[in-house]
Length: 449
Image (tube, rainbow, N blue to C red; front, side, top):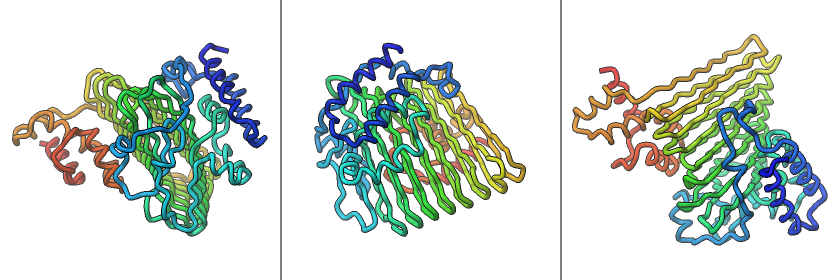
């Protein structure tokens, strides 16, 4: 066992003293997670799934566990999305009641910190927790299970429609020493329920912490969930996330995976389409600058006939940043009459920026419609010249064309506060929010001149 692996296991041993008296099944799962992590160790670039991502910055980090959730309300207010929403807030992985807002939750909605849900009815949580993402999925899921203590549990009763978004806010502090957190999120959406879930990762400038999140989402028949993951963590933060979705018949899961911050970011998104007419829509946008590394892995498993997946990921990379996209569509035997579409386009703003893209299709049925495509390019100098000829300075021209490139994803974003955050990061401080559809048309027209 390496010194890196042992250091994390030592942290786990230190935390065990505070967990005396927890249910036997939780202790057993922690032990299984620790044993699996000890056996696997941290992934290396020799592992195919981690071929382009070096996690030594995590493995060699000396991360403690946070001891409190103190965070200035004024500082939190500047980081919080200006959205009228129900909100659970976590500071370095610890629940903060003072920064949360749960008043007025409608009937049929249960939103609790994981610690509270386990204390009130651990048996109800224990069944679905870990069923989709077990310790075998990756070393990081095993590590999450070993440290699992806090997070969020969202339950929607059948037929419940939640009008306001539900926000899970994860704040990262710039403390005396770096800390790690391993949040666990469980969503159970009953039949015909509808909700919008926003997962927001943000923090104080200079923070250099490690977040290792696992989310499991279970959608019953006709359930509709829109899931925004806005990751704008401080530029020194390290972030790993696994999101696993199970979909029953006629359900629809829409994901917006928007990555703007973090030094090292890895997100795995998996959807299990298990019932006819289940649909997954994956929208992704990642923006990197400096030496940021952003890795997006997606997988749509068509396990039943007449299921549908659509994926559109865009990457924008500047300076010496590095992006990774690995999107995979798998059509299982006898899953006939499915449709699976995948598109990945990448824009390099610097000669030193890099992208490794790997779109994949695995088809074991013959009556299907599946396509995938991948492109990588740079800004069109003729389009920049045309804009400058109209009195627009070069920096703004580059911002407009970059924003136009991202427009296809941003147009689908249904929450203005999130779209505006992304626009500012992608295009810089522009004078107003542009009509993206018109901007795209203008950029295309200018490029054709």
